[in-house]
Image (cartoon, rainbow over all chains, first blue to last red):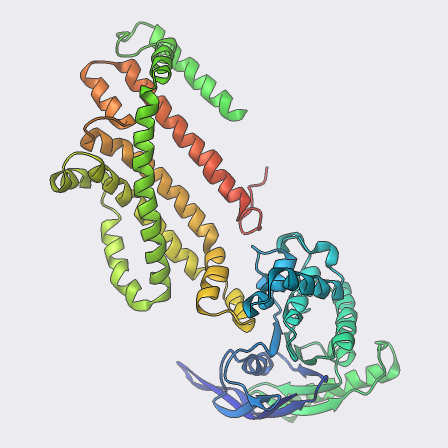
Length: 251
Length: 252
């Protein structure tokens, strides 16, 4: 369970203070899939990075399972957008086993778990391949397996499929929905893609930029697996788009 | 195969000049004459003795340089004050040819291995320092973040992420260091070695007008350098950074 309370992040630039995130509050229940949606510069990635513990908010508090976040921790798994996040000098298996190795799990045991995780993302055949021999989509699947391998309660994802082609992205979303159904992790997923948010999320948090604020929360109560062509699906998309564009009209 | 063709063509050209009679045969011996000398020196073990001496000096100097360069390079990349202190020193000392130090080292340590090894060390240190320092700073920050999120810190971050992440630079540094060390050792032996060593053989042979001995030693120097460059460092690269896709081979 994640609780973000009145989180603000300000940073100084030569031209003055910039408010990247302004007084953001939201929660994610156990095993809930929450999407942060918004245009570039709305602070969604910044917010995710603070949950990850890469840096601390200027004000406010983030709690995971009741514990205040003060830095990085093994209770969170993280997947970035960039394929280069994998270690090129380790095989897929070696990458997935990294977190377990840091935890001090014995070699045979961590390889067994890593292989299990690779099976979850349907890559067990490529366990001994180096990342540069894998396609972008496969590399992101390895990254997901790697983030899950040490069994964190929370999975944080920063636009993991944004750099993939549309067909691969659809396939990856289906796969992620399956992985989530099987692992029941609490997920915070950042995206600027409205359809992706409706496909994946239980709840969508809409953010707007300058300063980065939470504008609305939209619950998505559609049955899974979701049909991206159904009327209800499109209506959710429309609602999100309305929240995202309203700001411009008000100005 | 192409390497052989290049070498054969160069050899034929040399042989034509040597047989043309434009120069005294003692100064420009024919290749068979050089070959015979080389064979004799190989057969009686003298050449091997010299080569072993030279290799020992190279690896002592290179080993010291590698350790110093790695430690200093990583410290410079990690700690600002270390970088601020050593970078001006490196910049000031690097342009001085290592051989220019040979007379100084001879004065301090006398003729022999110490002075020679120090010259080699001096020549090989800079590529190791500069490349390690650059390599550590070029490690993808995303790897550090991902590793940090998975619980890596301090020692494990260094050995499992920074070192392999910097390895393309480090391997190139080692290659350059070996090249410079190999060049430096021959020069240093001419000046500082009192007996033994491929450089010393050449210098000594000059006194007796033994051009064939000089050329035979040059051939051995080239051959050993070639073997290390192609076989040792080439396979080190193929086994690591090329295999990992961190560097690519050139396209045909």
